[in-house]
Image 1: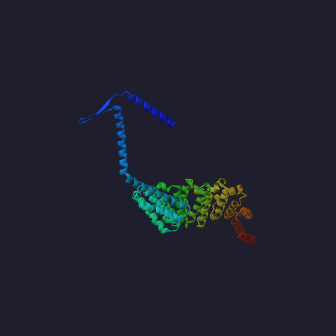
Image 2 (image 1 turned 135 degrees about the vertical axis):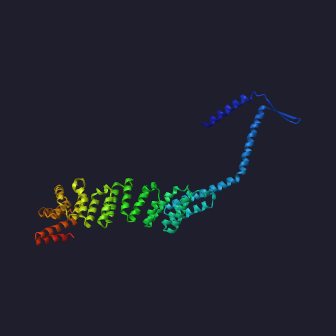
Length: 415
């Protein structure tokens, strides 16, 4: 198809030329002193066009000859650039392949080639990437001194050059990750704190912050970070729930007095306070610190609507209430009796109600429920032991030493 088009164009040019020049009878005369030369106008035009082509070709040839050294220099620079790029790619491939010594050597070779070529020295982003690859390889080989030196050079270059600024985020994230590998939580948090706000909220940065706060024994900060990760879908729903719950437990366990525990509880999100397991853990801590009113106050919403939570959650809430019974008021009795009626087959609920009735010295009702809880094999061993001990206390109140001894013996068997 292309050949046909060229033939048509040539035929058209021939027709136009024949039409324009075929009837041209003009002459062109040249005078030089006493000499005169005459040529046809057609020949003159052809010679003029040919002369122009010759002049253009001569100029191009002369330009090529003059620019030959420059082109040779550009070719040498291009060849060194290709060599440096190949060395950097080889370093990357070796790094991912786990050959860290080779990766470090290839990265350093790329940097040497660039440093020896002035035309390539301005590519600061290439230099930063080379330093980061060398630093990463040194880190994998436990060469912390070499790693820190390469990282320092990369960051210095980033601060001096605007073209290498996009690599700064990666350099600081890598440095924070290496600090975590060194178990240096303060250093990791310092590096993460230097990141821009947008970068600090990325999933990878949040994961690093979560690891750093957990390593640094900062469960409250870790809980906030985990909450952000959960919003960014950094975990599955089940994994996020388990992680948030465990971090809430760690936060509660760090409280050494009731005031500190109250502050921790107040800092929790509403979702955390509505978690039955978290509330049960908080109530256990409060009861251990002697704040029984606080413990019962944190558990009360779950006893008001026990149908809104599952069986495992009811068991946790019930066992937590057992430890917070001293000083329980009469206002609790209606909700406890309603719960024992609705969940008569759940040993933990029966145990909690029985212990509460015993605390209020309603021994007749309490004995029946406690005996039911003690005989429930599905109840945890600690709960059954608590039921037997409460029965022993009731028998002692009634001066039934034989029954008390039997209950103590049954509790001892469960130890």
